[in-house]
Image (cartoon, rainbow, N blue to C red):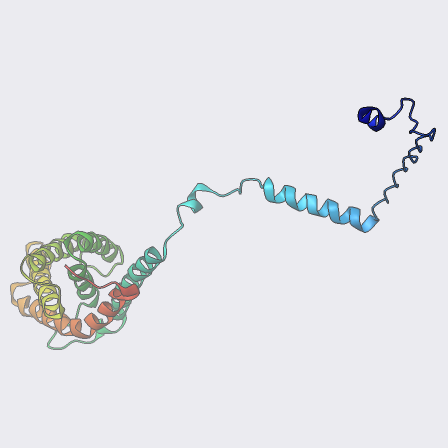
Length: 240
């Protein structure tokens, strides 16, 4: 009996003859508002920026410029070498324009060669030797050199004295100046012997070559202070 009471009669009618209420009619969906002109423009601009940021064309750059990307340390090193080269060129100009007109006991200085020897000794036999050879070539083509043999007269003593300093002494002011002075003496004596062999000078002029070496060594002392300051750029210190 309990089961019959709980059952509802078929036909959608409830017990007692009452009919089931009909469901309400479905609501019509609201019409979407058309976007305004400003909103359309903003959406198009946003899409355009997204496409540009996602698909960027490869930048057209020459392969030569790609190799010119230097680190900070490389830029400082390049600047140091440029300044050292400019010091040597400045010494060459001062020697030709000013010091060549000043004679003491018939001799004068040789500033360009003195600057080359200082840089060569302080840089060492490897880097300094390459610098000495290149600087000797530039010195020869500058028109101030006595002849093409000055390239070997600058390069060989510079490399030998740099090797001697690296083998027996630590890098310092005294060792640098002493080895540069030895290289300067070797250069002047080699210059005298070469000129004597070629018939360009006489034996009694040997003292003038020695005085030129002495004057150049005296000038090396203030010149060394300038070159050592340039060599310490960027925290770089010449050490063995």
